[in-house]
Image: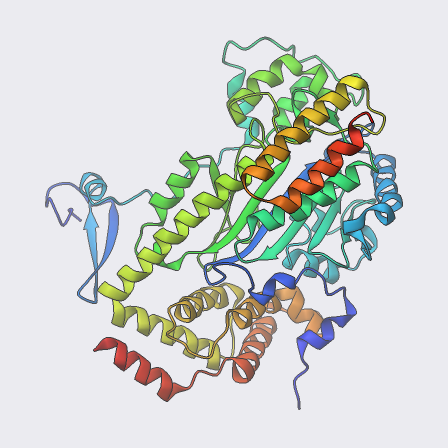
Amino acid sequence: MVCEICGQRDSVTKLTEVINNQVTVRNLCEQCAAEKGVENEEGPVNFPLSEFLAQMGEAPEPHTSSEATCGFCGLAFAAFRETGRLGCPHCYATFETHLRGLLRRIHGGTQHVGKVYLPLDPTAPERAKRLEGLRRRLRRAVDSEDFERAAEIRDLIRSLEPT
Amino acid sequence: MKARDPIEDLTAVPDFGLGWLDASGDHTDMVLSTRVRLARNLQGHAFGPRARVNDREAVLEQVREAKGRVGPLGGSTVVNLSSLDTRSRRILHERRLISRELLGDQSGPARGTAVVLSGKQPLSVMVNEEDHLRLQSLVAGLRLQEAWSLVDRLDEELGQQVPYAFHHEFGFLTSCPTNVGTGVRASVLMHLPGLVLTKEIGKVLQGLTQVGLTFRGLYGEGSEVVGNFFQVSNQATLGKSEEDLVDHLDQMVRRVIQFETHARQVLLRDARAVTEDKISRAYGLLRYARTLSFEELMNLLSGVRLGTSLKLLPGLRVYTLNKLMIFTQPAHLEQAAGRDLPPQESDAHRAAYVRRVLATEGDVDPDNFRDDVAGDLQ
């Protein structure tokens, strides 16, 4: 069937329009459909992470040997590339160099700027980092006039500050 | 013979996670619910996919032991999924309280998998999913700030009781690198029939991906879009603060609401008779059909929800529509019937339930309806 607009090219898609309460369906070619603003109905393609990782290997990234293995859980780098899942918290240190490149591609950066976790037995620098994070959140809560939250964060800050 | 009321029969299973049905909150005709989840892992144990039975059991034990000291988990119940019967697990899944993974396959979920359901707040914690912990809040309507605050407070308290895996650069560590950093996935379940009918949905969804958001179907990852319901959520989790991620989603969802409102105005302006006919037919089918597949029901409910939102179906509340959506899912119907239902029977039970609910709380007066429509057409 030929396109109902240009009458030349083969039609590849249907356009449904409502004009004066009448539903009309027209067969259009790719070019005329694009001009009418018809989108590809399949929508964005969600490709699996594993393929993404496999493609990454082709880029000139800092090399992580596929034989590299996490000392804690025993996950081999090759297995990570296959499944896209890390094995344990220690994997992040083991595959750090490679992960930086990957995280940059997925998230646009590698530095976490959200909540700072205070470990159960914190060191002085960890405590300082946590305070810095809480102060950032406090400023934000005050800016957005969430005073209930601000009061809660202030209490968290007080509990950490040396008296 | 009087039909049994499925809601009464559900007392046999924990009646949790249905608070959002009440359709409170903003924009409930377009936004069903808001959910914020945090992915967390504990130090010293392999992540979900590589965890051994003793890892999983140790993680669950730490959570069980800690929950009494965590305020937001007051009065909570720990539901052990590996020893829970299949139908109850399916009900929890249909209520979106456990993931597909925790639902398990034929052999059931792995030992140590559990869900902790708060007795006081709309909060739950999945234990031993892909990550050790998935903290989640689920509230009605568009209430991102509130959902975030709820889960944030739970996270602050739980993190003081169990040792989270945290890295100074990468943030909260997760099994999948797509969740690392904040571990936040904020999502909003939207009903967008206007954009679908006016064929604008493709552009809107494409726009969302361009601003760092993603969309899924009703049951989350890997599920299909049915009944014009779209779950919109943030994509990246690292490099922005939780508040920024949540705010950004909130702003974008409000823009989608504007687009959807505009699309509905276009429908009423350019195709009023067709739109009203579709809505009325959807209501008529729901009101009188003798069998309904779940997919058909969802599509009809979509039409009726649009009608309610456009005030074309007076007397029908969003709460009733939300209820119909949840209690007509296969496991909920089986629970009400007290036995397994093969698909054909399930379709008949579904239609019977819908007829009964609409007769008692969704009866649209036909004369009233006709006058309304006639008035609008002039």
